[in-house]
Image (tube, rainbow, N blue to C red; front, top):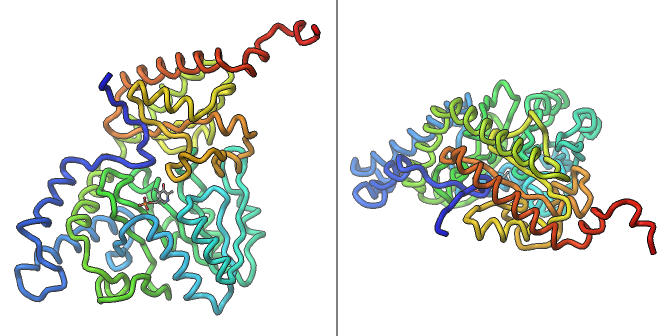
Length: 398
Ligand SMILES: *Cc1c(COP(=O)(O)O)cnc(C)c1O
């Protein structure tokens, strides 16, 4: 069986052919360094600025507010650590949520070691941050609120504009990790009260090892990588010109095709969810029914182990995930599924399938057919399930 059904677009995506085409010249013919003075290098400078303009446009931001980075993780680290350093005089308290990506959570841990205090907000059973809890957590020494735009495991879209409004009402900055949201759903940093935003190229059909940080004009954040004066002195290191050409092209296509992709992915997502719900008993869809990324399916199958489901899906050529890629391989249930209150066994039985522009309805059918068979097989091997299925009287027999 050499069929491949890729349903792990939250982990990474393929670079679109147009993206690769846009990148290629800068590896070979147009290899100049954007910092060089001669005209041979001017095309390199131009393409970096062209990509910056596309991304700024996509966000309703100014070009001068976009800084290229080497990943989404770097943008997250930069936003948090540089805010902590720039505003440490005002206070040393930061608010985030329990369901953030590890690029945020582990950076917060690092800042805790440096003497900062972090409040990790709870989320409800759908994965939403509670706005009243947020408001009452803000103190006079709170310098930053960092809440993700959309969750990478369960796809829940947070009330970002409201979070930003509350942060600003209390004189606090607002950063959002929009790595899962950029290119998937419309974002306007002004309307949504966003001061800083992180994104990553390889999550929206751009190249790996690219990302950017939007940083509103006037913020006091300093450079994160020290060295040359690239990115207006804010991020040293010779620009990844081909990567920046690629992330710009990917952003351009993501914006141009967004409406059509949202429609198609939502249709496929709901088709797959409905088939699973109709045909397999004792399952639970994790996340929010409507405030959800168009491409996210996260389902728990009671009496079946998530890792075992993934292995059997892999045999059928289907790529899915049990949580975030960063926690794959460890047997602890995901911190996100724990935060939405799932009991250990239900969290352990969850799988995530995330769709992309290439997926088809036929693939959803193939996937649903396989999952149905796999769950049946696993449950037949499960002593817990066998016991659960015994007629009630039998429980009372000795
Ligand atoms: C993938 C991801 C990141 C990390 O981005 P990289 O470019 O892979 O470093 C950060 N946050 C979220 C929500 C993600 O999904």
